[in-house]
Image 1 (cartoon, rainbow, N blue to C red):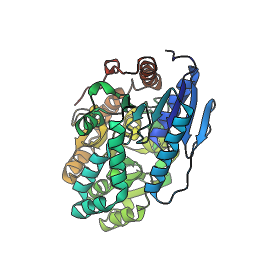
Image 2 (tube, helix red, strand yellow; image 1 turned 180 degrees about the vertical axis):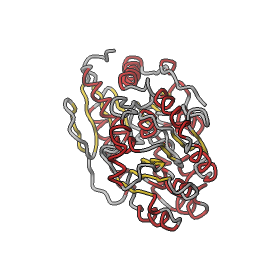
Image 3 (cartoon, rainbow, N blue to C red; image 1 turned 30 degrees about the horizontal axis):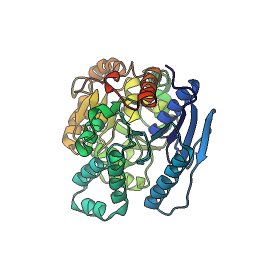
Image 4 (spheres, one colour; image 1 turned 90 degrees about the vertical axis):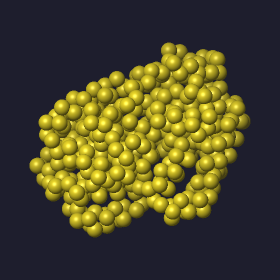
Length: 394
C-alpha cells in the first residue's frame, strides 16, 4: 500500500518512556511510514532517535503538569501552523490535529470511575484540581475541532464512550488494535523462565503465581488485587511489575492484610517476558484502561487473564469462556475468579485459547489498517470504518 508521494506527516507525543504502549505504537507506525517514502517528523519534548525521522524538540519551561501540558500544546500547534504538514496525528489532546489517537481513553469517564471508587473526598479533590478542568476542556476543543478528520481507538469500549460523550459519528472513528509480538511473547516462556525467575524473586516452585503488570497502581487496580490475594490460599502469590510514586502505600496494605511475604514488587522492567514465563495467570482489575498492551502480552504468552469490565479487553474476553471479567471494585467477584484459576486443568485448556485470541494481532496487519487510514485521509479527507474489521464483542 502506497501513500501520496513525499507526504509530510508529523506525529505528536509529549513524552517518551520505554515502558509505554503508546510510544511503541508510534515507533511502529513511523517505521512503516518511512518504508513507504513518507517524510516523517515527531514533535516531542523527549524521544529516542529513530532513523529517517526528524525530531522537532519542543520543551517550553513549565512548573507542574497543567503548565506542562498547556505550554506543550501551544508550542506544538505553533510548529504545525508554521510547517504546514500534510497530515498531523496527535497522541495528545490538541485541536490542531487531523487524526487523534485516543490511547488514554476519555478523561471524563476515568474521573467518573475514579470518583465512584474513592467516594466524596476523591470527587471533591477532582473538582478542586485545575488540571482535570484543563484536560476536560482540551477534550471538548479537540472533538469539536473542524480540523479533526478521524479518531483512532484501540478498543470498541473507547469508541462507544467518545460517541456517547462527544457525539462524534461512528464513520469518523476507526478501531485499530495494538499489535503484539508473537515471537517474543509465547507459551514457551514458561519453560525458559519459570524456575529461574521464581528463584530470583523468592517464590516457591509450587506456588500459584498471579502476575500484575502496570504502572500507576491506583488506576490499574492493585489495591483490589492485593485484597483478593488475602482471601486466597497461602500458596498463592502476586508478582507486581510496574512503578508508582506511592508504592510504599501498597507495601503497607500488603503488610496490614498479612500477605507481605506473598506480594513481590519487582519494579518497572524493560523486559517483562520472564515474568509472563514465571506466572500461572494474569490479573488486572483496572479502574479504567482503553486496552492495555500487557493483556495482549499475557494472552500471547498463554496465560489465562482476569480483567475488569472497565478495560477495553472486554472486546475479546468473555467471562467464564476464554477468561474472566468482573467489576474493578468487586473484590468478592475477583476472589471467585482468581480461585477458579487454581484448577490446573482449566489453566491448561485456556493456555491454548488465550494464545488463539491474539494470533492475528500482528504488526503487519495493524500497520496495514493504519496506512489505509492515512491514505484515505490524504487522498480524500475522510475515513470509511468498514475497512477496519472489529473483534467480536462479548
